[in-house]
Image (cartoon, rainbow, N blue to C red):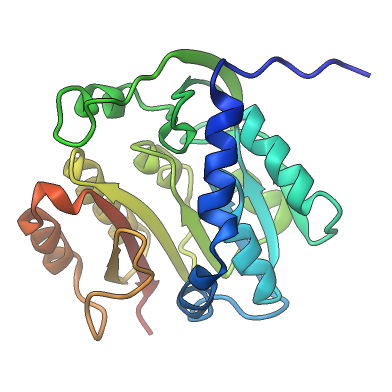
Length: 253
């Protein structure tokens, strides 16, 4: 048996905190399940790209979906294995996702692994930004990288893809060559340009309409989906303090 690599100092404590936040508060479940229930039904397939400690996996499974989950951080992957490892309808891939298959360098934030990233630009954007002053990426590892196209070749076309990879979202979407019915990607106000590029990338794939959920609200901002141009203008107008959220893209028709 191969010994597991030691986790960076402080990672275990931060993972325990993540588990309390993302799995301990069951009051979050109804809103999350209602949101994802718009896109995923029992028996369908969902991809969770950037699973962290797997709260979205849990939501997809409560909805009856089969899940392919990607998580490159060893500590987070171990947590997912503990929680979901005996579930035959959850496949964990310990890899990053990007434009090309191969390997990428993952920058680990040991104190706050939820913002670990494969994007050097994300780390640079956080430097000196309000609300990000205490964030330190203190460790780096090389991890395997797969593409969405590659995952689809193996597992099939998903009904929904969730992408949350801290500034690496465009690279993930650039590894997708066919439109899917619906997906979400995280955005931050320190890298709005990444969100704009993701929206443009999706428009090249298909006729998408958009909505947005700010923070962890799991609530759409708009009563009905809006155009790509309208979404870009909305993100441009957000205050810096809005910080982050998820853009949802849905094929029209």
